Length: 398
Image 1: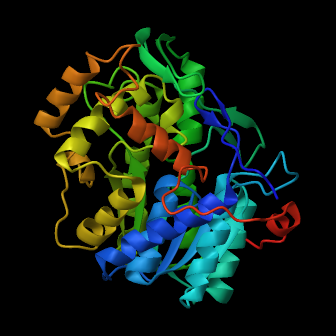
Image 2: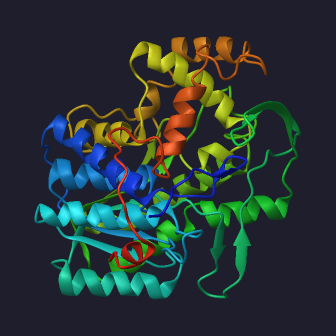
């Protein structure tokens, strides 16, 4: 029997518990079902579907709105007992198993989303086996690198500030340490590369390819998840390289709206709230912001995990009766986070956090830590240990 142990390097998970991932998928499905059914899209393509926002979107739409889904991601399967692959690999498999039990189509593509070949593979599947059209395209890709689809050049993104050095507190989850970090400003080349990897260019390429192939339904919707944050994280996020990438997504969204005009389609930037993801754990200073925010919002009853947040977005906002759009046409489910009272209390709390109290009940550190562990199948509610062999894991079909 394989012994599953949580292992970290800094704030990066090095291990996975596949059985825990299966239970976490079921927990999210149960949450959606508890909210009841809702009217939504029926044929959905999710680019970046194996974890966090993308996975939660897929679960909400499948088990809340009865949607058939295509999920695209780049994950790795088990090679040995010491290298069991990625959590996203198992998330894809266990989602598919659960969806198919309820008669839903759940197709997984494990390929490079940036390549032209992948786009054509997905298009062929839509035409031949997915009734020919999709009515929602979700772009939720989080990648640190991108291979240029035309030249093959490897492009890397960076998480840095722009034009200024930023100094602030951070936490190392592996060492359980609270420390001061210095973030150096990005070069012009680093800014451009980050926009290329994390901006809206690939989203636009996807929508052009899907439109040209005539696989977009009349009234098609497409969404891209963004994050703006507040003054508390603006120096390293909104005004940093990540902010530049998010701004590019807004530019590309406008172009997509023009592209979809003749089929009455709509492109929407969804400004999501701060949640615990593999990406958010490695953004400089961000875990400490979350530690403050989570404590404040948990006390107010408004803290959300990705499944809670995404289910609210689709159930009540995009396909519901309570959308909140700003003057730029962005959907703003982050209004709970940006409530002035919440932000004021968060700032006050963050200013109190130090090396002696960061891991006490004063902060939301325990919430962040547990939610981060859940991403890899550890500390999952309802988890029961099962005996499973490497061969059985390798035999799972995605």
